[in-house]
Image 1 (cartoon, rainbow, N blue to C red):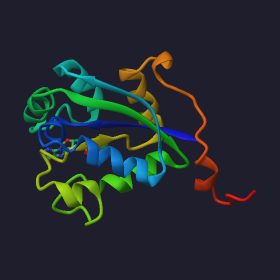
Image 2: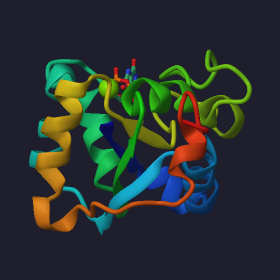
Image 3: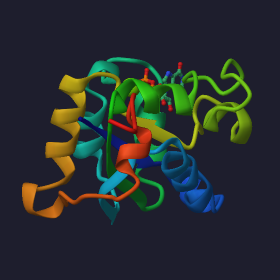
Image 4: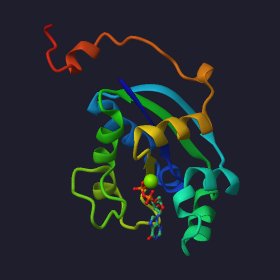
Length: 153
Ligand code: IDP
Ligand code: MG
């Protein structure tokens, strides 16, 4: 089982997309382990996006990310990191496939609704940035066997 970090960005909150985004993650079969509404500051944006700190658009990205509260979450499932990347679609919503969250619900790279981890290593780092172990729930769901490769086994 894998955990991934998902964050609904300020545009997702402002456009009332919280329910729709969570619905897609639930429908996929992922299990919600933790969620928290937070208001980011520039320091945590830099920790979330260390690979973008030197890019010319970073100040605009940081201003956007601190413009409204966001919803931070941990989702668990088989191959959760890759599955969630696919569910979100390409970074640029203009290039994201229809059927993905960004492809269906957004128009601009600077307002692409939602963040998710791009590797297991980054997922662990990002989760630690936002949640303590006590804030992440471990629990069984009776539907879990119906998401397995061989549910009848
Ligand atoms: P990801 O969100 O698909 O993982 P990253 O490359 O990690 O994509 O970029 C993080 C976020 O930074 C993107 O989701 C997007 O909001 C913003 N971003 C990335 N590239 C650009 C750009 O070229 N112009 C403006 N914003 C960008
Ligand atoms: Mg990224």
